[in-house]
Image 1 (cartoon, helix red, strand yellow):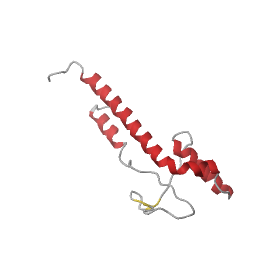
Image 2: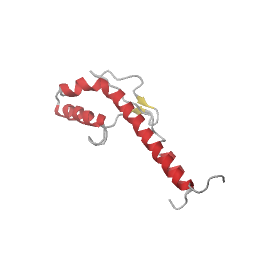
Image 3: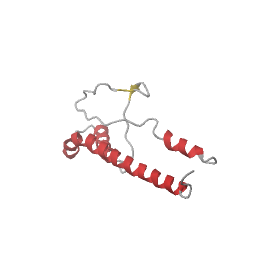
Image 4: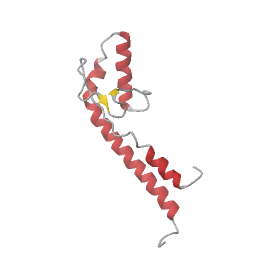
Length: 115
């Protein structure tokens, strides 16, 4: 950004729609609530399989559904553990991100002690 105070805004705006979790469901029984608060409609998403662990499994579910087949057993047996694993990964990523911000802040403020 051209203005340094915009950097803080950019950092914070990336968290605007965060806070979503992962829910496992089977057999067409949708979880309650099934409506996404931000879009006011049914919502799900799946991204690149190497971006997040959960997307690897979601991709396999989509491939099976598209082919009219049952999902592979290795996918189905792993699903119940994924929400907890994803929450732990998010927690760790947040810890690393905060440490990076702390490091940059400390470097920028070095020599300004006592001001």
